[in-house]
Amino acid sequence: MSQALEALLDLLDLERIEQDIFRGQSRSAVVPRVFGGQVAAQALVAAGRTVPEDRHAHSLHAYFLRPGDPGAPIVYTVDRIRDGRSFTTRRVVAIQHGQPIFHLSASFQTYEEGMEHQAAMPPAPDPETLPTAAELLPLYADVIKDPFVVERLLEARESVDLRYVDAPPYGTVGEIREPHSQVWFRTNGKLADDPLLHVVLATYVSDMTLLDSILLAHGRGGWVTGDVVGASLDHAMWFHRPFRADEWLLYDQESPSASGGRGLGQARIYTQDGRLAISVIQEGVVRIPR
Image (cartoon, rainbow, N blue to C red; front, side):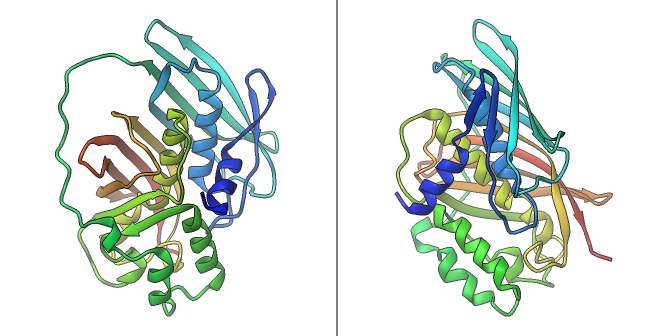
């Protein structure tokens, strides 16, 4: 396991300060606020630690309310909404400086047999044939002019190996492309067998690239080039089948709409052998700077 992945796991390992109250730390991100995927992942950790081990997360719905301060701890309070025979529901509020910055509802279910069907996995190249972030980012040094941004991107990729199938938005600035993007990802090291841990890591990564397809449709490079400003507004995930975040997962993303200063991203995450593991939808603020 890489040191960066160990540091990420430590970041997501919350301190329990009361039965249903947890405290988490933050770290700097590419943008000057707490990374949304971190808050969502930590909130899911808090919810999961109040749920019996035989109940696994099957969905989450979240709203980003205020920008998080990376220099201050985040307190997560969990409400035990319902404990049914098959399903458990939790509500989590993340608080900083006395104000809520994030709200999450999560549902957990005991395993049961049921009907089976799924959308077919789209074609994608072998992830091992694609460039790593360390190989890709130097190619765009003339586009990403801020070395701090490059440093933060490389730090994030030390814990998670994320590889673009086609050029990222900042690689084709000014070129209008189809609002569709694919990335492969996995953690840079093996994880324990705890199913919650794999769900949490996938939640963390899911906020990294989901709005890329919006940028592609308008020839924008995004937050790393400064030709767009934005933030996540809400985020929803459904966990369909077991998966491992330390094995390759294909994140197939598209944007059906952008209007009113907002853009919608939707995606499916597949295991390398073609099983549909997760569905994701997110809306974000996407504005062109004045």
